[in-house]
Image 1 (cartoon, rainbow, N blue to C red):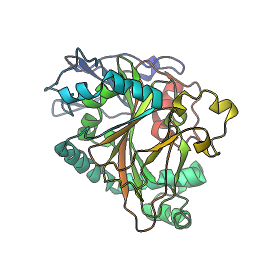
Image 2: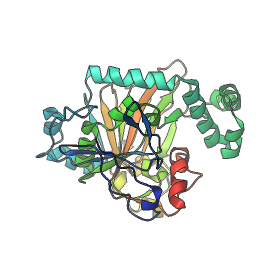
Image 3: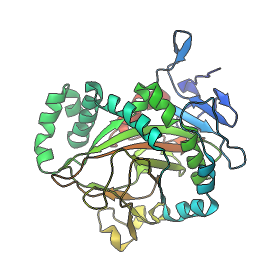
Length: 349
């Protein structure tokens, strides 16, 4: 298959992300951008080592079909039936959607196997701890914590007080071809394009969230406010890897319609009790194989996990519409900056 690698020079800040194509399989087009300009070849196969895996998928109800030659989770007839006009309208009005059983038991098992292997490595553990040190103490302090032991010692007092909300493992798809294939599955791109109402999407990032017993609450926030894009077309898949019980399991809480509240940044206060401004809704009990999908501007939070409560593990995927523009000045102090700062610098040159 022919693979086109896009150079950073085609993606200057303020310009639309490029539109190269690679590996066409019927209606699904897979694209990587931006990677190292010189791909590595091993055993006759192209091995991409780079920054952002982007997915461009032409995905409409009339053209989408099961793609047997592309690895990953295919679009099924059930997906097409469930993602109806009423469902799309409900997502647009409320800003979130719960989809039970979006993955089969076998697919959940395959996903768990690859994530467990990656997450358990010392490299990924160190990166997750360094990120939390950076969030709490700043980038300079995080750079000085070069071992797992040093990071844990730095966070110990905060963890005892419940001031650490979770550990976050960014972009594991860059470390695993199999996880990259899953993240770029036609099924995810089908739901993303339908719910956003766009012809194609790009994978921005994936992340594993580990919320441990004793971890504190997750404050109200919107995902798009932490991303370096000038767009409204963004959504997140939140896929539990462990069962989340309705009580004590730290399920997500959504502020209904907050993604359409243009007045909030000007006249509101994110620190106030949002129950007075919006109706709130919990996802409640959610199981591996289910998905909670929310718009990039939808405000959401999660409660603390009590001591002795269940570990909460979830995998997230963030998609943007193809053609989204980069912010001219992405903030390096943002909580998610570690996810994009390595490649966004190249685009700023």
